Structure formats: structure tokens, C-alpha cells
Amino acid sequence: SQELEQSPQSLIVQEGKNLTINCTSSKTLYGLYWYKQKYGEGLIFLMMLQKGGEEKSHEKITAKLDEKKQQSSLHITASQPSHAGIYLCGADMASGTYKYIFGTGTRLKVLA
Amino acid sequence: DSGVTQTPKHLITATGQRVTLRCSPRSGDLSVYWYQQSLDQGLQFLIQYYNGEERAKGNILERFSAQQFPDLHSELNLSSLELGDSALYFCASSKRGAHVAGELFFGEGSRLTVL
Image (cartoon, rainbow over all chains, first blue to last red; front, top):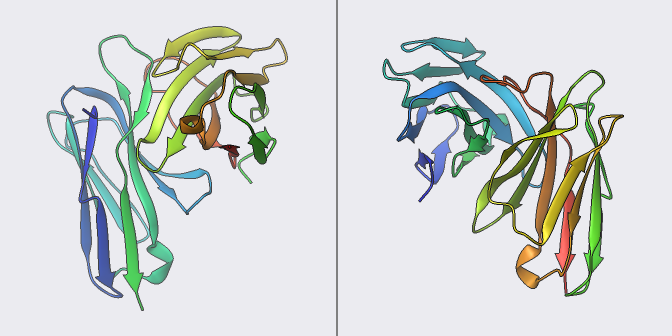
């Protein structure tokens, strides 16, 4: 099973709608990261969350990390076609390992 | 442009063959990460090097090996290739290698097709 689970796997929304993507870990995380990937291209960093309860925003994208540092959500307000792509959460796992792993990904399509 | 360079961009080879993928990290970055991305497995962590030393190992097959050289570039060697090895292989780099590695900068990937 995946160490980082994302939901939903895919999402199709009408332009202007809000949406939320979730990322859940079974372990406490040192750092939680959100990336965006366009099909067949490299990942682009969006945000990093470290502290329990932390929230960050960039343009119309807001990410939160829960108090236990095991779950994060990414919220897009008033979605645009430019938001389309694959969103992945990434994490430095706890327990002394330096593995930097990624979630299963959420494929977002925004209809104009 | 992330500053991470991967070569080759595309590679087509036959089963049983061996290939080498190369990665040059961003200037000043000491850590290099390798990932494999396929449709059914998602983005899988393979291995990480920090300043020439192996730092973490993920789901890397025994047929695969990697190293980081003194000039910090890295190579991923894939041998006895199978059809299932067809995937997009990414290299990423960061300044840090410890806990909370921070932002990773990804290359554009090397697309490997095994026929």
C-alpha cells in the first residue's frame, strides 16, 4: 500500500468552481510538500508545510497541514484552465529515514 | 528551467539491454534523487545521494544501480531491461540531504521505452 494516499484520484470541475485535494499519511511527517506536474514534464514545487496547523497560500491555492502532521489538504479557489495538471503531495518520512516520497497523485481537469 | 539537466530525453532499447541515464544537478545542490514514474505505479522513489554518499534507498531493483560522482553529477544504470521498466525516470536535486529536505528541483525526465 502507498505510504501517502491522495484523494480523489481524478477530478473534473467547471471553471470557476472550488476544489479540494487530500493527502494522508500513516506516519508523522517532517515536511509535507505540494507539487504540480503537467503531463510528461517534471514536477514544479508549490508549497511546503512543516508545522502542525500551518496554512500557506499562493495565488488561489491554499494548503493546510493538520495538527498531528499526518494529513494535508490543497484547496483551489475559483479554478481556471491553467490549474489543470497532476497534483502530488510529497513528504520527508519520519523515523530517521531520508526517503522523500510522493503520493499517488490527483489528476485535475478544468472545463472552460 | 529548473537547472537540473537529464540526458537522454528519450531512449528506445530492447529487452535484456543495459542503459545509463545521466543527471546534472543544479549548481550548488548536493543531493540527487532518482524517481521512476509509470502509469500504474505513480512516482516511485528509487534512491538518494548526498555529496557522493548513498543516503536513502527506496524501491530500486537489484538490476538497477546508481552513483554520484565527485563533480556531483549522477548516473542511473539499468540492466537486463524488461518491458516493465518502460517509464519516465526523473532526477531531482536539492541543497539539503537531512530531515526536511525542502524543495526538490526536477529535471524534465528521461523517457525509456523497452521493446
